[in-house]
Length: 137
Image 1 (cartoon, one colour):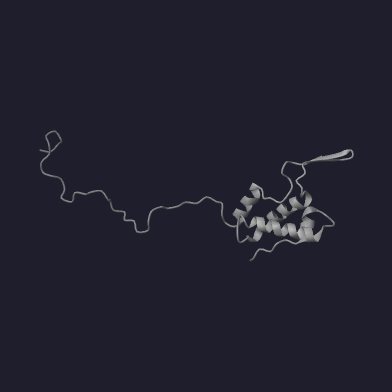
Image 2 (tube, rainbow, N blue to C red):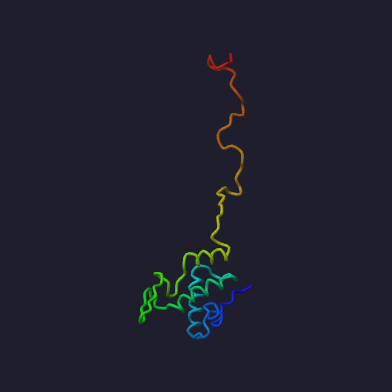
């Protein structure tokens, strides 16, 4: 199956908005897909939540405002909670969906390796004479 980018309507549903600016949402989704493709390419099938998450952050808080006061009401958002970016968990999810990011082993032994010893082997056996005290006469 090939990755299908989410639509502007799906982004509105994801954010819980009744109305959404379609052109702006479509642009943010395309930019989120391009950003995700810097981590994995081609995009894996299940990458839609990551794309929606990145595009949703940018749609709701494009200027990365962290503190806002309007009249008697004030809102404080976490630092870095807006704009178009991928979090560490977004990147990890993309890699996991693409089948990367897990543990692996590398066997450095060549396929032509011979298990026989490479040190010198005396095929003639032991010499008949040993020094005194070594158990042979």
